[in-house]
Length: 614
Image 1 (cartoon, rainbow, N blue to C red):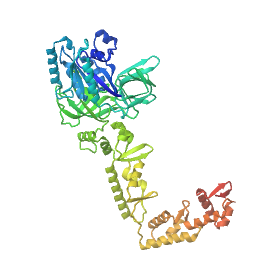
Image 2 (cartoon, helix red, strand yellow):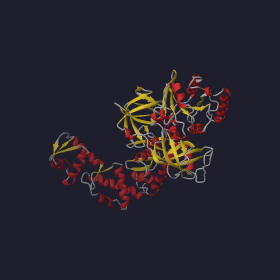
Image 3 (spheres, rainbow, N blue to C red):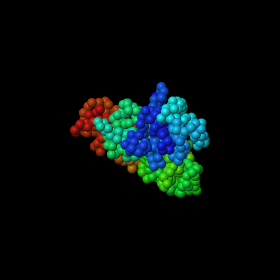
Image 4 (spheres, rainbow, N blue to C red):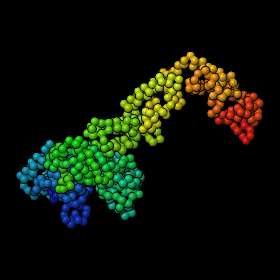
């Protein structure tokens, strides 16, 4: 089923509600005050199935200038505008304002109804049609059907219904594949059900038992029930008018202007946007206070051009920053309307570019340049600002994209989630690491490598460790040896005296068997200075020719292999320290550290005063 939301627009008393009732059979004036005064005060809703696979949901808006903010709460969700102009009065102030609002909201299609056509002669109807055509020239309504109708006699209603159907079939509807978002336009309680909210499903889908979040407060609720057009349903999709029965929240916690959405976003108080001022608007000063309308929300805000030299003049467009007085859930691409404080009139509108932008330009030439970059490639712009890694969850919250819609790029996972990396930055860090290692090897040729943690802090202190591991994995010119890093092509080149010292040190440990000499004694007999001797000792340990069993004792690998072979011949046997001394011929000074080492290697297992050979 294709669901298209039709929104009425037009001046007060031009017959929007009467026309909606004539088309759908639903009286959208539900409030007692509306019936008493004979005017629409708040939004009204109706439904009309018009063809197989096509359903029209009507949002009837008030036409009085005092209730334009209510009109805006309904207009934000419409796909198709039904501009209503009375033949008895033609174009009036709210005709123009509502029409401007529809244009600023980016509505792409519509139909014009000339109401009360039975009250004037045919010539006057034709004159009104000409005036409407002049008004809409160059807009989304240019060339749209203009149909005279009478809700009283029924004249023109079939033609209007057919025109709405034809236009609706061509309209591009909202995406059911996006994240769920529902701007709240009504809140009430139903006996036996509890809290209910209604709205036009802006994007995504919602199902019974889904967990949703109420923004900006961050409340969590569960969808207990769904109604579409008064009928119970298990799920609803983008473009439908829905009522959700919520559990976990009270009516007093909810209001028009909130948004129910997937629990992946964050409300914001700062945003960058492209603002278009109407030709008839007044110039705006830097920091001017305005009424900011988006979705069903209305918040006070100040507007500041991103370029201090930009003047916000009538009929111009500019990149601006809005500072909102209250947090609101917004995403890039959302449309908004701006109205003056005094007099309260519509002066412009536009499109959100970025939510929660930084105060400064960062790596970009200017804040304007940043906004332009973000408008073209939001993920790329975010990574340019956080090249060392940005959580995918934050990218989703800032852009509103699904995970599958975020360019794959370079990704790394750790306990915090999936990190997105900026490939040019990673390439630069790879080159920097290789340069640092080359310098390290040149200055310290006897050192086997640069400590990995020291390298990570030097290159990527602000990035999660997993990012550094990803860098190492893709840098084939660098090899990781345990806790050390070296250039893969690097080989330790010894001087003649160092080669001799290395051989002598290994021989001293090998010849000692299990009664090894003190390490300091071996270093002293090496024939070279202690600093270089210690480096050579580390090389022997790294190559596993020597094995350190504790802070004081180092054994040659062949001696430990002989002990292991001795134990294998006695597998399963129980023995004491004395037995071990007899088998190996070593004193208690060596026997105890050796046995503790063998325990750690799980070659033996202590059992009271005895041990068991594994």
